[in-house]
Structures are given as structure tokens and as C-alpha cells.
Image (cartoon, rainbow, N blue to C red):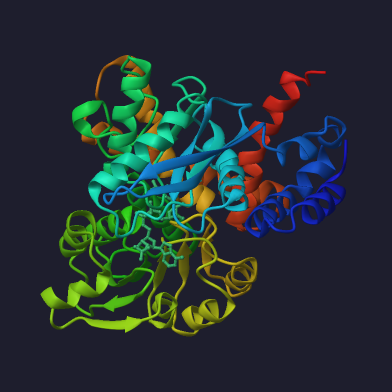
Length: 446
Ligand code: NDP
């Protein structure tokens, strides 16, 4: 039964090591202070104490054998953060940087993102500190099978539905789904992002990147009377989100001049060839530098953050958390950037976001701008339940409608509660209101 200030103090002191989680909680709770002032019942019902505490945290070992017969053990996580508005839903991340703090931050963000989609989905997230880079397909398969063997005890189509994230794409989802199906002996849509040949949804692969462009196009037209048409765009990362953001930005008439990976940046003045990136990243699994062997007129620089030194109208950080700090924000603004859309989760530091707001740069926060992925995952669940697949056109049109609704509800909440166009506050407030109302209505088991 605490107010926001005491919850923030408690979280900051108790979870000092979980810096990303503390950062995410700070952002959301500061945004909803104004809601708390208007509705004292929220503190009375312990909503703030309860919303920062995962309902369930599962940590498990993942033993697997490499191609030489050597045994390795990684750590697996699943945080079932908040199920007030629906079954837990959120991706799995395989990356050496994964730890409990990272999974908690992602799971916490997911609560509000899922609420914003308007679909009945609670928030969760999971993953492992396993590094898929450099592993053979058979090693990846053995790891995925061992991971899902344990995780399968805790998930189900009405309880918790994982999907992909960094390091977990079509290949990994396929291996996990195949093993899950064997363990359970049934064909349920318990993981989303499945292949089209086995009950996946059209547009799921493209959804986060496309959705990001739909959201930003609406924001840019509404707040700046500008558009992707004719704009120069830079996109960090070259994974699932980045590739399909590039494809859609191009389709909307923009020129994507730069993309990156964790090693460096490619710059192609006449516009990056997205099909080449797809082939390098999705088929060959090569470094982005390889682009130069195909496009001789492109340039490469070492260092992933160098992408923010380049002039652009619209910047789309689509790689990872806190990849864009103050210096990069100042560079972007100095070079004329007027809009930044977060394809990744929490890619900009709080200080960078403050600068964007001060300088009138439109900032689309991740939990709103990248919600297209989970939205189409929700549509995949619907199609699985109906046993009937929808056309590309139908899913894409629904995605666009959802992104437009998310933009409008974020803008309206910002306006109603803080008299600003601050989409960070707006998204946090709009996402929070539904979850808090469900938590209040459902009471407390005691
Ligand atoms: P992928 O694994 O497909 O791609 C990740 C990209 O980011 C790669 O280019 C990778 O480069 C780069 N990257 C990863 N870590 C770092 C780092 N520490 N520094 C610089 N670059 C890095 O992941 P996704 O595209 O799926 O996810 C990207 C972001 O989008 C994440 O924040 C994720 O949480 C978020 N997101 C993803 C959704 C989805 O549907 N996939 C939905 C909503 C959000 P390299 O290959 O060199 O590691």
C-alpha cells in the first residue's frame, strides 16, 4: 500500500544490480504519477507495489552438447510478470548479455505494450545467456530442445505464450515448437512466430518493423505535417525488426541510407538494398560488412554507435537497449533529425529522450512504436484458435489499424493527463490504465 515515491525508492534500493529494470520502472512510474494523484485508490489497492513485482520468476539450467561432444550449461529464464488482462505473452532472447535484470525489464515493458495493443495479453519475457553466434544448426537445435524441455512445464496456449526476440528467429522457433509438440503430443499454438507451413501467421515476420513505420508515419504526419516520402532514414541493427522497418520505410518512399550490426555501420548513399541485407543476415548469417563485397559504392565504419553521426530526417534504433545516448542524440539533432522511433525496447537513454523532447523531436517510445510484433502474435493466436489462416492483406490491414489506435491512445492520454505531446508519458499512461483497472477489479488473494 505505498505511493509511487516509496515504491521507486524500494525498487531502486532492492534491485541495484538490475539497472535496466530499475530504469524501466522509473520511466513508467514517473509517467503515471499524475494518474496516481487523480486516483488515490491506486495506492490504496497496492497497485504500484504489485505491478513492479513479477507474479512468477522461473530460472532453470539448460544443459546441451556441442558437435564435438562437449557439455555446456546455460541459464534459462521466464518471467511471468503480470497476467491481469490475459495470459502472459512476450518473446525469448538468446544473447550472452541476458540476465534476470534484462528479462525483468523486458517483461515489465511488455505489460504496458501488450495492454496498448487492445488485445487480451498479459506481460512476460524470457531467454537465456546462450550465444547463438557461431553455433552450427545442430548445436542450435540441441540447445533449443533442452531449453523448451524445461520451459514446457510452465507455458501453454492459455497460460503463457512465448515468441522470438534477439537471437530467436524462425529457425529457433521451429526447433522449440517441434520439441514442444512432441512433449505435449498435441498441436497447440503455444509459441508465436511459427512458420507459415505449421500454423504461423502471415505478416508476423514483418510485423514489428512494418508496425514501427505505420506508427511513426502517423505521428510525423500528425505532429510535423511531414512523411516518410522523400525522407532520409537511418536504422540501427540488421535483425528482424531493422530489416522489415527498412523494407516498409522504402515502400513508403524513404531512402534508408545506413544500417548496422554490433560491429559496425554500412552507409549507402543511393539507398540500402534490403534484399541484400536479408540474404546476408537471414540466409548466410554473415556480418553486415559483407554488404560491401556486393555493393562496391557503399562504405563501412567500425563501431555500431557511429550510425548516429550520420545525417538523417528519421532515425529508427532497432538493435538493443540503451544504444543511443546523449552524445548521439545531440549529433542527430545537429544533423537535422526530426523524428526518432524506437523499434528496439528502450534503445534510448532517459537523458537522450529528455533532449529529444526539449528540442521538439518526435519520439516514439518502444512500447508503443514496436508493439506491432506482439499485436500480430495476438492475431496468430486468434487464427490458431479458429483453425483458419487469414490473408496477408487482412493481417497487414489489422496491424495498421492497431498501430494507428496505439498512436491515438498514447497522444490522447498525454494530452489528457499532462497537456503535452509527450508520447512516452502517453503510452505509459494509456497502457497502465487498463492493467490497473483489471488489477483493482480482480482484488487480492489473501
Ligand atoms: P535480432 O536478433 O533479429 O537482431 C538484433 C540486431 O541488433 C542485430 O543486428 C544485432 O547485431 C544487433 N545487436 C544486438 N545486440 C547489440 C548490441 N549490444 N550492440 C549493437 N547491436 C546489437 O533481434 P530483433 O530484431 O528481433 O530485436 C531487436 C530489438 O527489437 C530488441 O530490442 C528486441 O527486444 C526488440 N523487439 C523485437 C521484436 C520482434 O518481433 N522481433 C518485437 C518488439 C521489440 P549482431 O548480429 O552483431 O549481434
